[in-house]
Length: 400
Figure 1: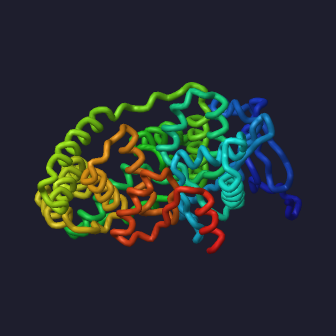
Figure 2 (figure 1 turned 90 degrees about the horizontal axis):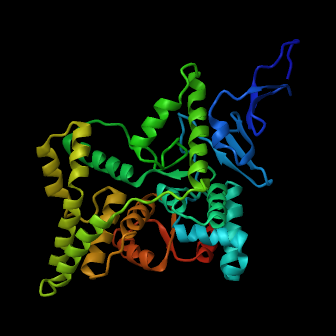
Figure 3 (figure 1 turned 90 degrees about the vertical axis):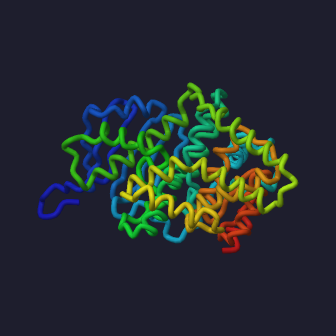
């Protein structure tokens, strides 16, 4: 708008366009365009336009074929504006069901298809939050099926709307820091929100730090930094998911062999009581976390003696006051005591589902893992609701 003949300088939107221009749309309707000086054009080659609306805190992607999706954006002051909306974490197989419901409905039962469509509509309307995680990025990125990967990626991007679950290892590190600090009487910053719009939150912190240093222009106003990083962060996720080249996943063969050896040994100790075998499994989980505990102690300035004191006094307790760690330790022990066979993807599945169960309202996954997790959720009276079908999830959401 114009006031007293002055031209409005309030920016309504910034567009990166497929003609190589970056356009600034002002509130009074003016549009100023120039050659895009950023490197976003290369990353956005699949799109006709990407539009950032700072006052609406929205980032809108439009594909060349007319399909599109939008991302919510937070602020530095409030990076996690959940506003009481239910948070639903979907395991990869459930995202696949959502994708098939849109692009191959004949492959999904009628009840699950209807539930999937209903859930996506709720997500796109901003009524529920479906965060993506680095597990989704990794599993989808490993696909070599171009069509299937593109369909799944579009579904994840449209459903998640910029929401992420913080990297599971970072969540664990934060929980270790909080518990050690409480014991040692050290004041540290409160934990960062696990379900968040914070830029790059789903990625490993070391990757995130490198990207931030490289990406921030020197002359960028402070008020624009969070929005700029959010735009770039969502663009990175788009690139990871839609890249046509499969990204090899790291091997966990060493971890798998070590866990399976111990689990097999424990299964052979049936003469011991179940309680003793469970304690042995918990000690194995503790040994697995030794490096994490040491790093957390060093980061907050706790002494080795304080870390040892916390471990000796807390590890055998039922609830550690750390949801992700407590549930993972419990599920790992249950699986070992049961003598179940371990598979290479079990570490990723359990780590992320346990983290989600500690911080989301609903978790939906495959029957085997959810069944295992349900034992621990009951044991610690965790508030999360667990599901193996989208139909029961949607019924639960509709009752709220």
